[in-house]
Length: 371
Image (cartoon, rainbow, N blue to C red; front, side):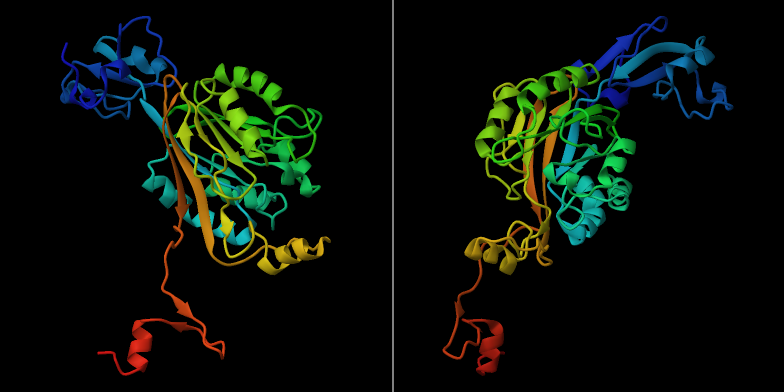
């Protein structure tokens, strides 16, 4: 038979032809029912629009309505799913930027599923119900966290009621909250999301490696597409987790250290990896903290109140494209929005302390050299 034109751009492996009776639609598929009638003969009460040999999207239970006219069933498997992940959101200023830009970024990178890390939204300490809802309304499907999620007492109630807000799985199981979620992407693919936390230079909680074993096995029963946020301090521990899960999950992305790493790659067995996605927050600071406060902590070696910086807000993220059938990563792309400036003009500081920009147009004009 000749396939309809809508299948022309699909790879042969993504198209299945099924008998019109007794068929079972595979997981992660889009199903099209193709009919032999002319448009004039199409039933008008169904609400479906069709023409000769054009696809009509129907639930399998509706198939009996058109049994006499059904010629064949075409199942088109989604070939890929693209996940947009946003790194640790630090402060309310960053929250405002992320909620504003989430949909434009998703459109730019053609994302099918959006995950964000929200453990630092509430001025660096956890997240409130209102803030979580703002992220969900902006398009986030799952919010991951880390050690700072526990910094607000009321978070326990929110974790108990909101299953899309995750906490690391390897805290003792008696703690409130879910540690994994199954999101459905806009192209119909189920995306498993797992939240884990490291132990090196952090709390001595349960082993994240052992915790990952049962979680991956459980989520794999639902989907081969599995995305892991590993919230950890030590680069070596993050790399070890990436290698440990290589071939068993689609991606392992690091969070917590707030500095985007330059080691994005795909491991030999198909797992995308980056040591740290980076911080979505104020970069005119020290990993989100006011510069003066951070420096005092180092100089004086005594505690100072954690105060969020305000300026140079940026969004750090990563985009991972995954094969929907196997769960293997096909591409990983870190990004920073807006990008950093990596060059500038020479600044000369005269004795009086006034800053002069050498060869600037403004200076030339003041000196009479402008047009």
